[in-house]
Image (tube, rainbow, N blue to C red):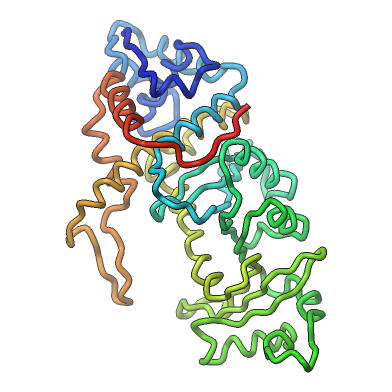
Length: 388
């Protein structure tokens, strides 16, 4: 099947041959059709995608596996992410980043993808990741690598990074602050207690919380006057000033009565309001894995191949998100559900709306390419680029 590749697409892959770019598209569309990353199942869709029904599934499997042996896969992933970036609306102001990891086992191997995403229209879209290949939490060096790689493509300065309790550390906080990246990170109870207790206790300071010790802050946070807004105190780590916040857990019957945060921001209301947005990356992982393209079904163990597969899946995921957002603009009252607590949610997620629509839109490689061409023809770059 000979199809001309649109210039809007190939301009992002100038260091790659037309054959490699075409195989990228064939692989992506076949994964979309199969809704899995297991190449043994994906191979069955290649004939339909290429409209070449004379080729055997075994030959198509070799074609797929050969694609994942390309050299310099990281460079290809970078190109894919610049492409993803170009499809986003340049008028949409990005405010938040979310950092988290997703992991699973493949035989005896542990796959652990630490992932950085942007929050776009209330949805997390990954912009870089690293395969750690280990159990347990990431270390400072590994997190720094994710930020450095993402920073080569996207301008992260001025954004607010949201992360859970395992993403802490004095050097890590200092690194983010020096990079101009603000953050709101949840803490375990009693972490940095000594430093917080040692912060200013001067009687001349009128702010009661700034005078209070750690245990006193916990006591004050439980008072009904502070239930909604929490309490905060400034303190220092490695010469850098941060805001410590204690907040009454709004969930009824929660195991943890209080929530603790550290932030480079000063406004405690902003800190408390920002943190729940972190949950968007958990929803993203669900769509990439069990609810969408079954990333966990991947049947390859090489870290660089896993990196590339993640890039392809993120590309497909982004197409679904963008279509879901368009459909959401035409939504009706029946598209929403109101719960007893008054919170309103979509009956069908943005991702699933987009996925269902694109399942009807894509028939083969030709329709897939035409759709991408149309999408790229109407958008402008969102982030500044710094690609070598």
